[in-house]
Length: 229
Image (cartoon, rainbow, N blue to C red):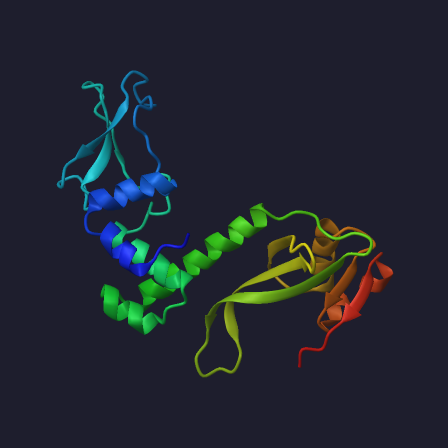
């Protein structure tokens, strides 16, 4: 069940609550009891020390001769970022619900560039997950709709130009099975290879009128065009 904003405020009342909630969802790795790779003798336990980092909590090896410390963010969504755990959770929540960046700036007291960077980061992670979960789709008597889109920041006052990453994908009309892939360009060669790698022969493919798709009828597919203009 999607979390409500009021619940997120309660979770973010303290770093301890945030960490426990993240543990429960697997957003932060729970290293409790794991063997320290540095000394191979001690085990990691959760420690509290505000002087270690702004997160207050960290992992520490039980072997006094080792005493290795590991950030609570290690190997997680939060690793490598300077924002507090609280602000990262809120900015991710606001991205999910497509909240206007000016509102986010006002609520979290962070600059526009930080918001843009995080919104782009969220998109990139989603694209990567979709690519990992992609599967070969289609087949005889199956309709697959294909399209390409550019994910990124729209350039203000410059028409419809968008700077970012092209993503190509397809979805079965009935089952909703899908595939997605990042592409450097939309040339015939690039898109045809992706189509053959991800869509079974004999599939009925529906696309827009982009010229790169004109060859599909001679490549083992049934091809129908839709004019979106």
